[in-house]
Image (cartoon, rainbow, N blue to C red; front, side):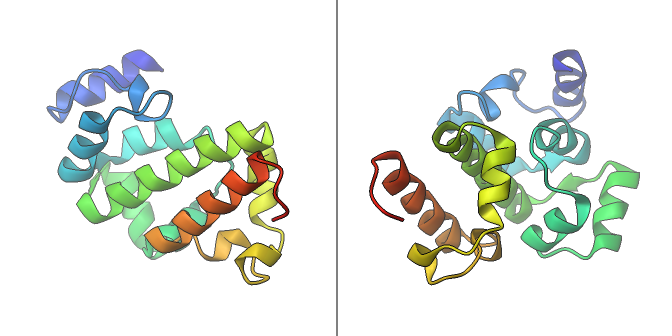
Length: 148
């Protein structure tokens, strides 16, 4: 998979190393991807680690499913505004995995109403930066044993 990612990086003249994107995020990589965009193939390679389906990604990115399918078919690059959101969600999943033990456990947690978030499912608010921050705060409280 890493070879495939490197091929994509060269094709789109993006930074060579892909691993830091999610595994060990470094600010220069995050800034670069959020500014230059993310090719669909790279998005797919990174997002296959988490259980979101195409419909859920479409909702999170505020793209119609048809537009999302076109991005896939044409291997289009997600523009800056979408790239930033993708990176935020990938990093949120990394954090959720650290706190809850697995991507699946975090995914399941996202679909259960949470009192600390106003009795809404966390999935319903992570389509924007403020919602992601709120979910991160709750994860921090869970990590420290504070009722959330």
